[in-house]
Image (cartoon, rainbow, N blue to C red; front, top):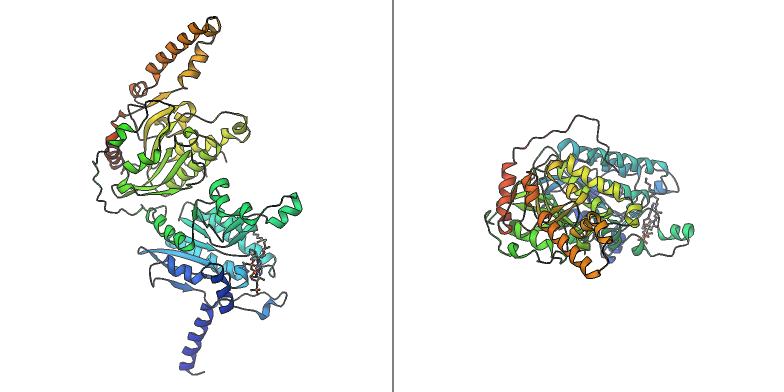
Length: 519
Ligand code: HXC
């Protein structure tokens, strides 16, 4: 072959690789409302920044006649590119080649970019659209999965890992995304489950559709497996770009700082009015968050799951911050199993990636009852406490209203190494609410009263007494557990100042192999 021909041959081969499983299958992919792997990568990365690797890899399997069917790239597009100028490593499964199923060689390609991302200290983004293990390959496919899982595990807490589910993701294949930091699913075409509807039917007799078993609604709302639900792929890919803007490239770096035009001393009068006089009346904590942060821009994580707690990323004076806030608008902001786990995982993510944590507290306590006890609220609540207590990033806590009992301790209190703990004058920091306290302390006296009117009057007096003594922030402030009681409208300024003062914070946990968080 002459050199000219060699070059033409290369150009032809590249064009062939770019067609994946061929035009017919690309059309079928489009007909489902899905983009191809390369189209997705192009939308995700800065224009023209993608450098593809391993375009000429083909499978090495000789079973069931598959040796006669080979596609350049073998069902996954891998490489690197940039997002807002910062390098990321990507892999996108190509459903047009054997349904994106995972072969030995596909695993090798994915592992290569994961290894490079680790060596370079860059995020890894995986776009999943696959029929699972390549059936013709057998155990080499299973081994390939495990190679990926091990890398997911070792990369955890070193580089951010983000998974987009834009198609099927079933069987053991679900565990790679599950090991990553964030999962997003599209409303229409994505599903995740360990066993599909047919197996479910044969084993348990349950009749259930794919969507009801493992669609985006299920995982974003019920199971909490997915952190984000997006309408379509474009929205998902833009969301990945946005999410990364809050994150550092790796655990040794800080998140990028943006210039902010939102004055740091902006007074927000609405906050002086936001707490209702009636302590049982809810309000929307999101209004508080939006009033404090830069330009009201908040990227909420797990928006549809365990809505009694809010978690997400934002910026204060241009610097990334992770926010955890009880939501009085949903189940009175109570801590239960799901909200504890949700917040614990978020706290740990922030801590792993040097993102300071702002905690806004209005929590009546842990949700009582056998349902929660049987579901392990003790262990789940302990997770959140563990996560806060272990975290060494700057931690600022503002108590807006209720902060009762164990939930007070859990929500980033002073003794769990909260750096600055502020309270609004409306804060109530006590062992329990007044009604419960009076019942315990005055039980004998109350029982001895026969006249119902006298009884009611006595209880009301004691409740008032208790509230005057404890339903305020000043007892905690008298002990220094609250560093200052602040005017609500000044919260943004005080919190930004606090984080500025914490910029040089250096706290190192005791040396150990690893902790034993109550999983
Ligand atoms: C090989 C596969 C494949 C697979 C799909 N294909 N899944 N090839 N191995 N796992 C091929 C099909 O033969 C077809 O080839 C093409 O991909 C598209 O598949 P269709 O069935 O036509 O597409 P669709 O109707 O959209 O259905 C998608 C699907 C279905 C629901 C994913 O293909 C399916 O059920 N696949 C099998 C899923 C499965 O059981 N996987 C193993 C799970 S166990 P042509 O040539 O026609 O284009 C597992 C264990 C992992 O994954 C363990 C890790 C620890």
